[in-house]
Picture 1 (cartoon, rainbow, N blue to C red):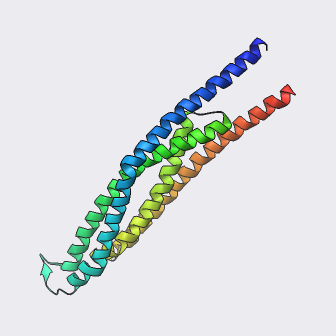
Picture 2: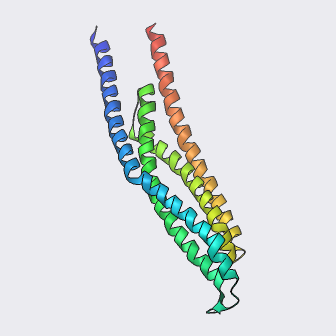
Picture 3: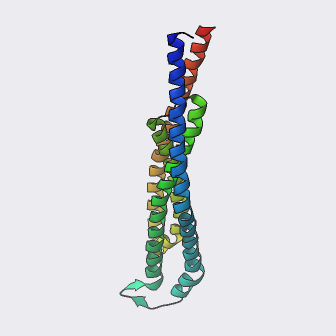
Length: 204
């Protein structure tokens, strides 16, 4: 084995060691995030559903049966506003927790695909995270809107339409960013595979 071949083997071995080290760190981070955050996300979602159910089936029907107003506002509008604030706080905590989850998942993806392609980098990890953040946030916001819509309509009929328009505009931008991040990752992998194929063809 000549010196150039030894250098190539050494580079490949070093690259594999970096992939293993990066992957191990990401796996540990992912497991830690899932342990700390996973249960909290599930409980937060369950709490939001409970609040929505009780609001729809208990609180709002009772409030709509009241003819008197409180400080000039209908009671059902005030109850709806209180529920919206409670749901907004829960959704915000879910957003914070999801960011930690996507961080771990992005590391796992970078590790697995890095082993296949022979390349791992922080840039690839960041692209995976951008893609996951955009997709999951759009899903969470869309589901949250379904929880909020009826209560927002009780406050004012025009609010749900305005909020939906804003969500659609933001959602399109977020999904576009996710697609760009995925395209960047695919471009890096295909370029890497093309270089590897070209190198093997030259050797033969």
